[in-house]
Length: 460
Ligand code: ADQ
Image (tube, rainbow, N blue to C red; front, side, top):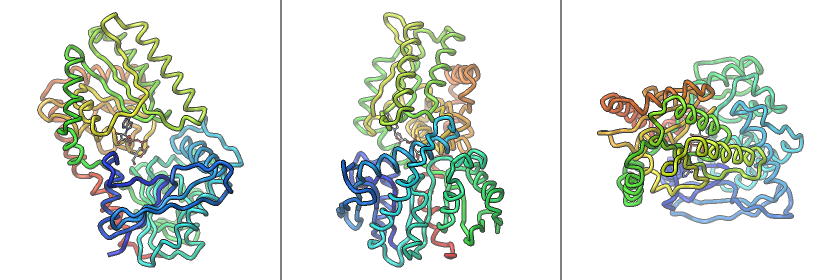
C-alpha cells in the first residue's frame, strides 16, 4: 500500500486530544501506511528572507510531521493577503470585501514554490499526495515543475463560486489551470462541481470526457463532490464524557426556565452573524411569547483579527448584541449572551445538547461541520432542531433541517419560531433522518472515498 503525504496550511498533531475530527481522520489515514504531514509551522520570522524558511520535523509514530516557518513578508502576502484577502472573500461571493492588491500574488506563488521545494525530498515515488484548501491551489503545478509524477489530489474546503464571480480575480485563469495539474479535485458539494464544470467549459473550452472528467490545458482532471463529514461515533462518545455532562448540567441548571438557541463559529463574515442577530431581534419583536424565555448564546471564536474586515465585524456584533439586550432585556433576563472565545472541544457537545435550537445560518459555507456536530450530540428521545442556511454546503445533504435564507430576516425569524414550537414527534422524525445522513457520509467515508477515487485514476 502507498504511503500518504498530506499538505495543508496548518498541521495538527493527531495524537493530541484537542485535535478535531478532521485532524484525527487524516492522522488515521497517515498512520495506516505511514506518511508525512507537511505545512506552515505557524511561526512568523521577523526580518527573514522571502521564499526561505526553516523546516522542523518531528516523528509521531510512523508519521512525520514536517513544518516550515514563514518570514513576515511571505506571511502577510501569502496568508493574510492572497489567501484571506482575495481567495476567501471571492470564493464566499464577497467581491466587496476582496483586496486585489497586485503585490499579494507574488508571495502566494513564492510560498507555494518554497513549500513544494521543501517537500520534494520527503516524497517517495509511490506516495499518494493529498493537498488541502485554497492556500495551496498551485502546489501540484509547482511539484510537477520539479519533476513530481506521483498521484496528486486536491480538496477544496470552501465553496467554488460561479464563473463570473471567479473571473473577478485577476489571476482566475492561472488558478483554474493550476487545478489541472492534479489528478483529482474534490469539492464539498454538487453546486461547486457545477461551477467548476461551467467555468472550464466557458472560460477554458474544456471538453467533458464524462460526468467527472474534464480535459483542458493539455491535461485531464477528475472533479467530484466529496461532502466532508464528522466522526459521528467520536462526537457521540464526547457527548457522554465528563466535560460535556458537566457543561450540560450547569447549563440546564442556569437556563431551566428558558429556551436556549445556540450559535457556534469562528467570527467570520461568511457565517452571517449580524443577519442572525437581526432575525433573533425580529423573533422577539414579532412573537412576544419568547420574551423572558428565548435566549441566544452566540459563541464566536477569534479569527484572522489582523484583517480590518474582521475587526469591523467584531464591533458590529458587539453593538447589535448591546442594542438587543438594551431594548428587550430585563433585570433577570438577557436575550443574548455573546462570547468571543473558543469552547473546549470536549465541552461543546454538552452545549449542543442543552440547546432547543441551533442557528447555523452562514451566508455561504463550503460545508459547515457545526451543523453535523449539533445533530450528533442530540438526545434522540428529545432532540433539538437545526435551523440551517440554504447557502451552507451541508444543506444539500441535511434536507430535514429547517432551511432558511439568512438574508431574509422575517423568514428566518418565522423558521426559528417554528423550530421553538415543533412537536416532539416531528423533532424526533427529523433528527433520526439527519443522524442517518451524517452517519452514512461521515469523515471516514469522506477520506476513504476521496483516496479510493484518487488511487483508481490512471495518471495522465
Ligand atoms: P470552518 O469555516 O472553520 O471550516 P466549520 O465547518 O463549521 O467551519 O468547522 C468549524 C470547527 O471548529 C467545528 O468542528 C467547530 O466545532 C469548531 N469551532 C468553531 N467555533 C468554535 C468555538 N467558538 N469554540 C470551539 N470550537 C469551535 C472550513 C469551511 C467549512 C468546512 C470545514 C471543513 O469553511 O465550510 O465545513 O472547513 O471542510
